[in-house]
Image 1 (cartoon, rainbow, N blue to C red):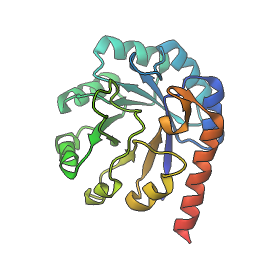
Image 2 (image 1 turned 90 degrees about the vertical axis):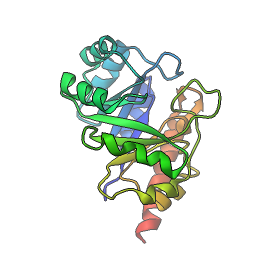
Image 3 (image 1 turned 90 degrees about the horizontal axis):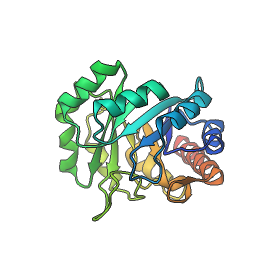
Length: 219
């Protein structure tokens, strides 16, 4: 199985190039002003052009209104929209119809019951992203460096397409791949030297750890 790898929260040409150079299948740009990873649509558009033909560009929003999404889609021209808020199934369907783009819907997970929330979305979302529930007091729905019990994903229907997120880094990605065997992974804070500051060396370490874990798993 080909493992898809998304580096999310990119903001600079240099770190984007590091992600692309190591083989990222997806690159994510965050449009949420309270996040240290926030970018404006014009900056994301320039970065998206840099990634064109090399990786799928994902626009990440949180309960964004149509006017905000219009500006993002116009300036960035993403390949996929990621909805990381409390968007309803109807909202997901409306966004897909309005922009003609695939949608990945994010869910916060702490216990097995949280996975049941995807049921009404299965006919409208193209993919899911499972992230850890944010710690108490956090203003951010993701990028908090917190993991959840990856063994919970063993209960999922094999037909569910998803990316695993939440607290992933070079030190624990081997365990995550072994326990969950996800079709895709998403890393953000785990390749940062400070909140919102991607580090090319940490990106390289992460990909090296992924390759090592998959080589051991295939042995």
